[in-house]
Amino acid sequence: MANIDIQLYFIMGTENTKNPLGVLEEVLQEGITCFQLREKGPHALIGDEKRAFAEKCQQLCRQYGVPFIVNDDVELALAIDADGVHIGQDDESAADVRKKMGAHKILGVSVHSIEEAIAAKEAGADYVGMGPIYPTISKSDAKPVAGTDKLQEVAALFPDLPIVGIGGITPENAAPVFRAGGAGVAAISIIASAESPKAVVRRFQDVIANEMQERGILR
Image 1: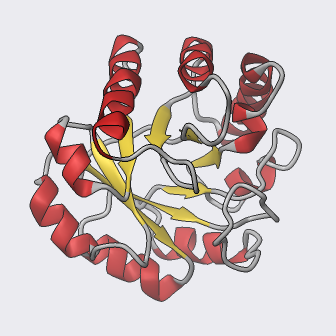
Image 2 (image 1 turned 180 degrees about the vertical axis):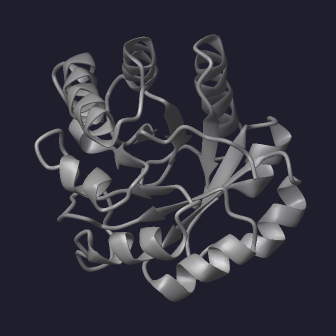
């Protein structure tokens, strides 16, 4: 199992902001711990343009020593030697993706139930994403709001499986995710569309530092 720090997991594509590379560099400077390229939407990049953009994001992530994860597109992840891939329940099976990516790459899986979490763990997932914790506008295909109950159940069942909460998470409502057993929080629009992405990251970091201190964990 690959180690990955998902405490502050930023997800973004070109549809989420007018200046994606600028935003990415800002939040990398400020200390996000993981980045996922999620290029979705009616005007999303495809083909060579998508690859070129992905490579620019990857270069920035390497510059700051932050894992670069590709959403859904296993072929692209393999072609550019990304650090890992994240898949949903409607994508290729986790077991097949693990075989393609190899044991040394990061595999993240979106899950919405204990059964899906069990299957992801058995397939070799390094972490799972659970949500939507709160209502979200970032995903048009989002599942019904789940709150932290399911996350808490999975965390209790698999204490060694890192879980990142996603969906409508802000600095003001992030703490319950950690208290339920989450290893981190994922954010899209709250950071990408902010007037000052750095300021939002700092607010998240304050919450995370406080929660880690409560647990007696040094960051």
